[in-house]
Image 1 (tube, rainbow, N blue to C red):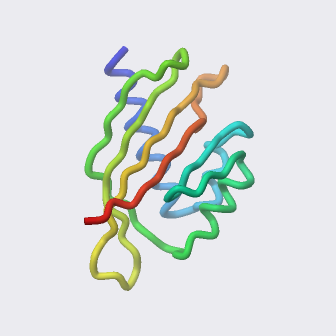
Image 2 (image 1 turned 30 degrees about the vertical axis):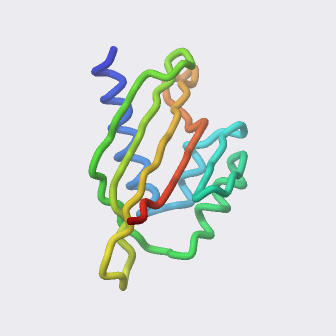
Length: 125
């Protein structure tokens, strides 16, 4: 069970950041009407608000480099908690921004997962 949780979590992380970096609009497929995002303290709910927030960030192109991925089963049956740390590289910037992001993945009947909770913070200092 623990191995499967880790495999699903890591596969999700690879998929999520690949979409974020190459086709941010496609992230909508990973969220659900009940999903919540807290981005640097700003809270938004639902697919449309979340995708609007992510699409309208003050940078277009970016590249995530993942440092760590930690996974645990969540209290929701079949759910997975994923904690990611890494760096965000922006064009024209000499220094990457360090970040942490937490996801709660909830299973769907067809076998895939959606993001119920997403918390993003830049790490300063």
